[in-house]
Image 1: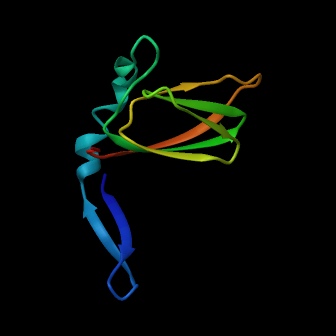
Image 2 (image 1 turned 90 degrees about the horizontal axis):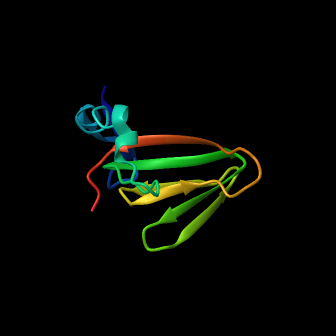
Length: 106
């Protein structure tokens, strides 16, 4: 599996910015046992950049500073290695898509 990231050069032209196999080294080993990272209150941290898109329903992302982000259908939350937990405080089921890309976040 390769990671290919596009960007722009100094002239504003589209270019391939990164092309490597870093994803294989960082993401794949972590995903099969992601449940093992959950703390009793479901807080967790992964070494990934996560793109979380709510497709239907509502979802709350709780951060370790006590803050919360309320997401509704169509909202997208991008996380970079932050400690968090997902909550559904709504009355209906939430459907969410998550894309996780291996990264070292600081």
